[in-house]
Image (cartoon, rainbow over all chains, first blue to last red; front, side):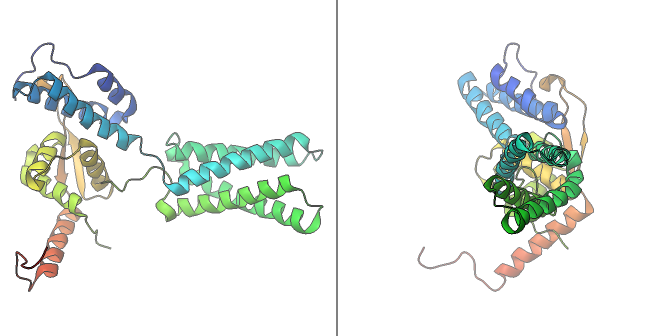
Length: 189
Length: 109
């Protein structure tokens, strides 16, 4: 291994992206590996443009893996959370029933934490979602049956109830590891 | 339940075995490229290393930083007993699949 020549730096913008987007555990290790590869390419006479292009491709592939989107089921769950949060907020604003807001606030919080877990911002607390997911599914089925069977039909309650029911069920299924599990795919390559 | 390894996972594990104490990200990537005879993207290698460690087939330790890496450390990988078992099983499975078949195959295609 040769001492890196002074001034031989890989493209700064890509190095900065790597530092910003990788997990702390990988940041220095992978940056170091790619830096070593870049300098070896220059020392072996490949020339800076070629070494830089290779660095950009390799660093880009690492970043793409780090930013891998969640599974299709995960995207569906995010969409369901968005629908149920919007529906609950709408129902809260128009409800004369003082018992509704605390439940709605709890369900909205459940939706927000679910989205945070899917976005990897709160992966460590994912098992805390389980009781909330069961409650959301039950709440959704109750709201749905009430508006379909007992109360006068209200389409806002029906849509929100259906979204909550599917959201809760899908969360439980993903927590159990079905449909690719919660979080980004790890089935590379 | 024994682990079923994909071909890329096997290439990564065999590279770690072959490199011994010198198995870190970049050396593993180069070893895989030499074995597969093609270029490999770093993202695929790091994702596979991550997954194999999460499955308990490998373990890793941080080395010291070196000047040619501007002080950044290397992460060295080694096989765990489960990794050795999985690799042996993969090899046996491949041999069973090919047993009784003359190679290279002759014919159209």
